[in-house]
Image (tube, rainbow, N blue to C red; front, side, top):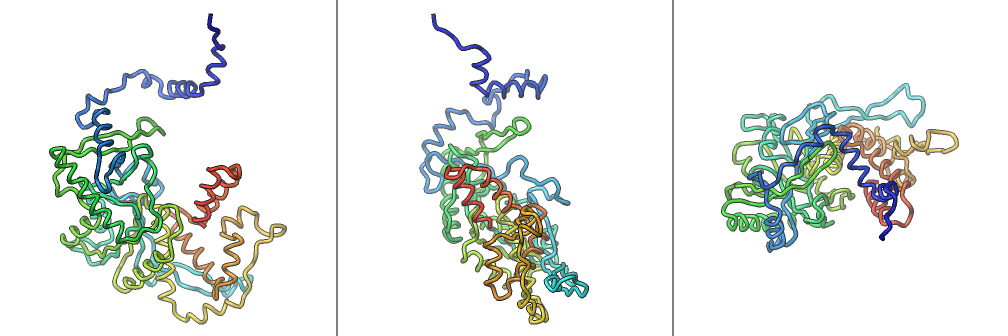
Length: 420
């Protein structure tokens, strides 16, 4: 007779059973309710049909084993932001520029120059996640750049990945086996991305015709608190509801919205390439006297968007400086270097951005001390969604917690270095 392991051992060897137990205890009577079959919902696609369609896709961009996933997902919105605009996730607005001030009562020469919000201007810099068509309009109306508004906005998308709008909502390309991971093409130019989107649109339109006016999409839903699933759904749309981001912005410009749109392709969780930074510089320089607001977006309105906002603040602040030479006199003052034996804690030093590489850079730059202080103030001003210095430190902690040489260690180290 076959021998069986004790039940206690079996449970220990199969931790998923503990998960089932937690779900039962956490959901109470709701755990006893029967699940609705997907086939009972008209807009939910049949699994076999989904597999057939996904495996037989043959477009240039929408190809085999790829899906059209909604850009929106649960918990995208940061709840601590002071305002919310439906369809423009994580929208926030802060003053555009900082001005230099002298601190006569400073305790040390290093503190004699600081930077504060420039209260002589009401210009702003905004951030947002990828908006819906209606969310885009609401965001522009928020900064008085609607058809009847007085202001002009320079809107810059920092997305590298191709996006397509379906019925007013942005969707992205994903591998069916990795629906939550971006498809990256580091270093791709804006022109290449927008050409990909045109082909993406052709692929979707062809599939729409083959489906008699319906297209297979995938959406991310929260089944229960903290548990998310990707579900296939059918969407009935007309051909004119399939649009590239360029199509969307061109349309709202025709509707009278006061906006100048451009795109600078930056890979998610990677440092902007020099060419991208040059494009940001040109963008802000060309618009600083024209635009009342600069608005940046990526997918979630977090890392790349915050980087764009900080960059705009630094550029606008330095362009508007008066008495520049007086400010840069501090160039001859030595920067206080972190001393682990007598000074701030290691955590405080890292949160202040005092990494060895940064301090070396400060020493090499002609006006490194002023630049470091200005950058810190800009980062702090733009921290409503993400503080870039803290993000670097958080990744450093993740790297330190990993075993050296592992795949996870290498992946996190790569991200941490790019953040820095």
